[in-house]
Length: 167
Length: 338
Image (tube, rainbow over all chains, first blue to last red):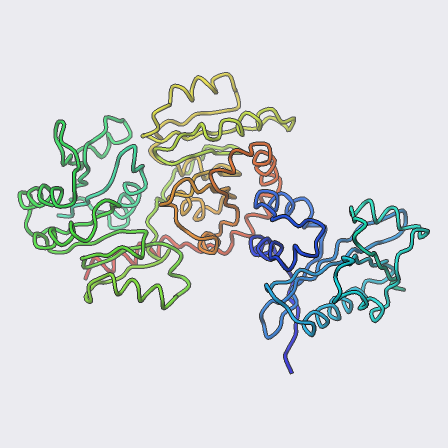
C-alpha cells in the first residue's frame, strides 16, 4: 500500500508552483490555457497566494498534487473555492481520486463553510466524482450562483458544484 | 609571489576583479600582482594601482592564448621563478594554462563553467551547483581536469566581498547593473517608481567604473531629489547593506546580496550569468527574470513595489542562504597553507 501524506506549501516553492501550474495537464482543464509568465506569477504570489491555503499531496514523500483553497466571504457566508494542481506531467485515476479524497477531508474540517468546485465540461474523468464527495450542482436560482460565477470569473464551459460544511 | 591574471575591461566587467580581490582579502596577501590587459584610467583602481601590471603596451592588445602566455611567462620569470599563478578569465583556457604551467610553482583557475577543459593544479568554482553533489557534474569536472587537480567547489569557497562600513547608506531601492552594465536599462522603471503616489522614498543608482554613460545617467536623473547616484563606489556593500530591495544583474553581487539577505530581484543580462533556477534558490534568491522582461516596465515596477511591501516575507525565504564568511576564509587559508 502506497503511503500518502500532506505538506504545507510555503513561499520557497514559488518557482516550482509556477512550473506545476504551467504543466500542460493543468492548463488543459484550466480557464487560462496560456503559459503563465514569471513576472505575472510573482505579482500574483504577493497579492493572492496569501489568501489561498495550499498543501501538497505527497505519495511516498513525492509531490503528486497541490490542493488549493481560496477563502473568501459573501454577505455573512464563508466560502471556499478549491482546486487541484498536478505536480506530474501525467497522472492516474487512482492518485487523482486519492488527492480529491484528501482534499475533501481537509474541506470537511472547515466548519460553517460553503465549498465550491468548477469542472471543465470536457473533463470526462471528473464528470461524476462530485456525487461521491457530497457536492450538488450550483443552479442558476441559487443565491451564490451569480456571485461565485462572476467573482471567480468562471466561464460557461465549466459546471459549478457546491457543498455545505455544517458546524 | 602570487600573480593574478584576469579579464578586466568594459567588455568583461568587474566580476573577475572582485573575485580575486576577495581572495586577496581572505588570505590577507601583501605581495601580489594583478595582471590585466591595460589599466583603465579610473579612480576606482587608484588604491590598487601599485599592484596592477598592464600586459599590453601602447596599441598592442590580446590576440590569442599563446601570445598572451608568452608575454605573461616573461613577466613572471622576471619577477620570480617560484610564483603561484591564479587565473580568472573566460578567454584563457587549457592552452594558456599548459604553457604557463612550466614556468610557475602552481597554477590555479577560477571558473564558472564545468564543461571547460583545464590544465591546472587547483580548480575553483563557487557555483551553488555543487551543493547538489551531483555525480554526473563531478565526473565531467574530473574528465576535464588533471588527475592531481584539487577542487575547491561550491559556496563554501564563495569569492565575493563581505566587508563593509558600519555606517550604512540607507535607501528603499538600489539599482545596479554590474561594473560595466548600462544602468539605463532600468530607466523607465525608475521613473515609474518615482511617479507612484507612495510616500517619498530613496533610490540609489550604482554606476560601475566601466559604465560609459555616467554623464547621460546624471543628466537624466538630476532633477529627481530622491535619487542618489553612486559612481564607481569602492564597495557596493555599503549601499546594499542599507537598502530594502536590491535590483541587479545576476553577477557576483548575487552572492553579496545573499550574504546580506537583502530582498533581491535579479535579471539575467548575459550568458555568463549561467546559474539555473534551483542554483539561485540555493543562494536564497527566488526572484529572477530575463533581460527581455525589462520591456514590461509597468509590471516590473509593480513587482518591485510589492517586494518592498513584502520584504519581511522575502527575508524569511532567504533564510536558506547560509553563507558563512569565517568558514570560507578558513577553507582558503587551509588550502593555501598546504
